[in-house]
Length: 326
Image (cartoon, rainbow, N blue to C red; front, side, top):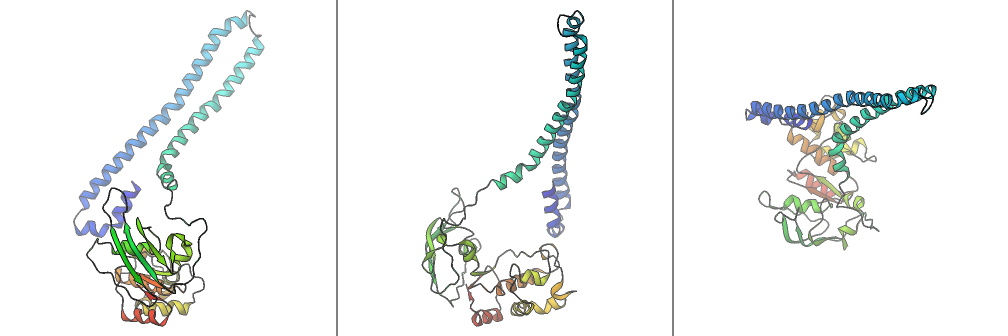
């Protein structure tokens, strides 16, 4: 239900643009109704458990009194005093037994709530470091894609098939093709977001699967197709996870990305909070911040720009610094 609500709020402009308010109301009503039915069943079980435990306890005591009472009075079993003590202890035991029933109900509710979380936690990553990873700190010779193919799953057609190319430091490679032709798929294999289903990708003679993942990804400044910004300041987003970057470095990168001008117009400039996913900025402005974040990464030796508007100034920065665009 929360996921449905979040989707409706996040896509409110599309919903309004296509007059889909009534449809979304109905979808949310169906989801809420399903949640209500589940909650009702859970509450029924919780309400039934306590009186059921009480009834069972009373029946047990009644059975003991019926069977043992007469024999205790006649002295066939234990003495009446010991029998009274036994009954007191038995009544004392009923309370924690009933409590265990309530704990069981709570555990079942928690189990249902955590089922999706555990499903994600139990997923094993397919992209891992090898046993003895090779650390790499620069790109100095060649990035070679050797007869690479990629399938996202066995029941889907290949996203890429028999792709070969070679990139040297300083090269600029532009991948052009129709939507869905695999441009982003190829780009995402370079920092090992995916591994090739066939073929190899070699960086300075090393297969990417033999490299330390963090050292490999530190070689790239990446601007993804879907821009993601953190709920933080402009400066913090540009200098993300880069403690050695100064404010001057941030401003220089913003200027190269053509972001400096509109940043200064924000209420607190570089210290302005951008809100969730950068909601205070337009789509083009978010992309500029993302480009600045890629440019300010000092360890980067290549720029990976996925469907990004690259201005001449960005290309100039790439030539002046040890950063190569691809």
